[in-house]
Image 1 (cartoon, rainbow, N blue to C red):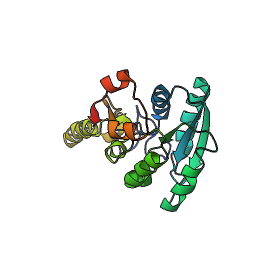
Image 2 (tube, rainbow, N blue to C red; image 1 turned 180 degrees about the vertical axis):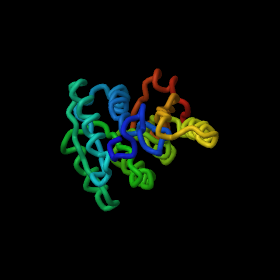
Image 3 (spheres, rainbow, N blue to C red; image 1 turned 120 degrees about the vertical axis):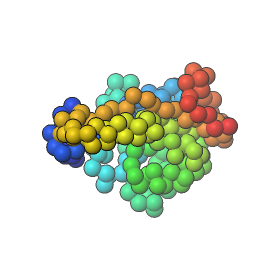
Image 4 (tube, helix red, strand yellow; image 1 turned 60 degrees about the vertical axis):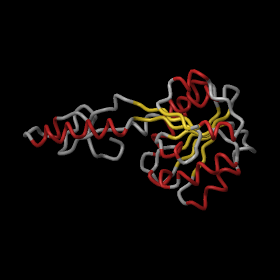
Length: 205
């Protein structure tokens, strides 16, 4: 909706519909999970790409959640790879105890570099797509893309049978996946709470 593809999730109002991964809206949940991993945290950093049209919404959602939890939010920006070192250099001076990496195509392409930097700086970090944890980041939590593709396939069938996209609500995810990298947890001397491990869909050991 933010960038104008549909009028609303319930009534797209245009010749388009589909499935959302709620990557923009998931910031508050990522914040809650980080706090569970680092309960002593008072400041948590949020890495955004300011060129992403959804960055303002991502920021507002996470700021609101931080305010409710009584946390300070340190906002950091990166839009090219050369920004990363400067971004991570700001974490300790600003007493950030953990990091949320917002959903962004550029960040996803740089997941290996970002994961390596989180380990080098011993900073617990979370990302909404599993590439980050698979590349060595601490953990990821987000909508299941395989389930989203299944939902999209259902809609393709309905549209091919004559239904109008504008009248089909944009589907929201029904399944979320948590991936935890225990190798990284050990590398940064972090203990992952048992309840989080028990709820993980995949644990990398």
